Amino acid sequence: MFSKHLESLKSFLAKDNQTDRATRSEPALKLVEVRKGIKPSIIIINGFLSKKSEDVSDWLEVVDELYPHNEVLHARWNAGDLTSIATDSGLVPERTEMLATKSIQMSVFDALSTATGQWKNAFHESNQVGVELAAELEGNESLHGAILMGHSLGARVVRHTLAELDKPVVSVAYLLAGAVSSEQGEWLEIFKKHPETKFINCMSQNDLVLKNAYPMGCLFDHEPAGLTPLCEENCINLLNLDVTEYADGHSDFKQKKIGQYLKKELVKLDQSKIEERSLSLV
Image (cartoon, rainbow, N blue to C red; front, side):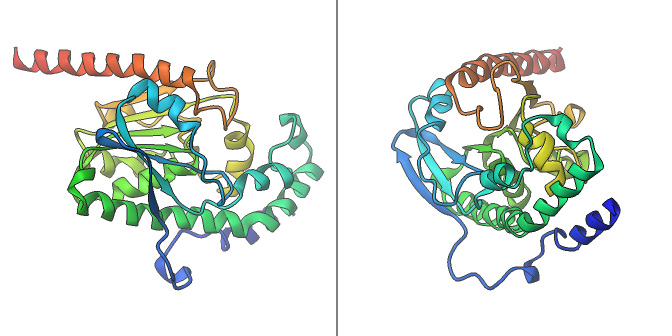
């Protein structure tokens, strides 16, 4: 019975393709100015939020620790109301032990069946948003060198954007609680295409959304970057950072302590890069 439920969802959560999407009447992405400032531009990308959410003031707690004088843009897109899917549908139980019995697993999959449409749309929408953001970055010289900061499904948008870019115009890519695959095959070509880009992957083992809801939404197909390190062997500019002591849950990444911690770790990354280049000249 369990496998029957799983198989019935696989066709519905198939990989994205253009023919699977209805004809689009308006852009998937809108870049909204949060504040003016110096370049490079900081582009913040939300996820797992209501599609009506436009308040991004929480992001500034992180951004102001790292880039207090930079221009900030909000990449606004329709991520769906995935928070309610995770909580109202019972996909994130109060206790992990609740998933232990077969009957609970069945009820969770029944709940998931009612929510898969929104999951699928949001996952597929992140692909189109990445296509449009890549076009904006390449076509607008003022955005060259931009710093991308994606939370949750926003990290998935970051990955799609980098995959679509023909030019290495992103200077730093932050993945916070990344609801995106950590598998090597998903990132190898991106690392090759963007050799100078810094990749900062922030993980928390307190993230019950990624531990419980995300695997079901992806049919246990892969581990998310928000829980599992990206492969450092493939990128000298990659930092996998465990921020468990600072982030109590999936929605606790956009706050001052995270920004302060990231600031210290970026200094270490820059110093190690300087030392590595010095050694190569000896």
